[in-house]
Length: 144
Image 1: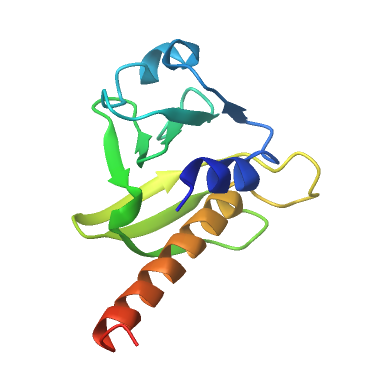
Image 2 (image 1 turned 90 degrees about the horizontal axis):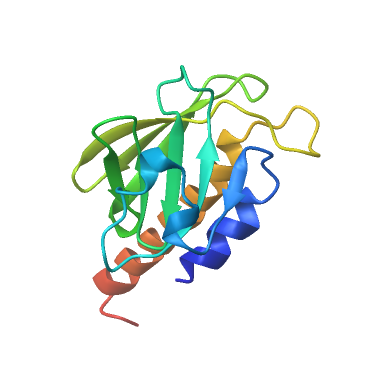
């Protein structure tokens, strides 16, 4: 799956999302979160006093902090649940092969009225879960 395209397509409407192509363009807090073989796509800035001031999107994972950073590999995502009503939601719970994670994104989308940024991340997660389920059902049916 082309993660860069999926991330940019869904996150570009969030006013707190910043797309990047070079590691040195990352916020200082996130410059050391990427692995040597992965490329950052962009980051989402929450208020400094929030649970996760920076949420980093790479082609391989979702990485969030503050310190130490936590990492969710895209291929490990099993399911997700956005917490709270649509107009106030800012947290998503993500179920992965290695456990459960809570990710916070508190802002709104730029031109979408009351739409919350967490739903942009939700669209990425929805696609990943669908692909995983399709792949699993394809394998269990013997590939037919």
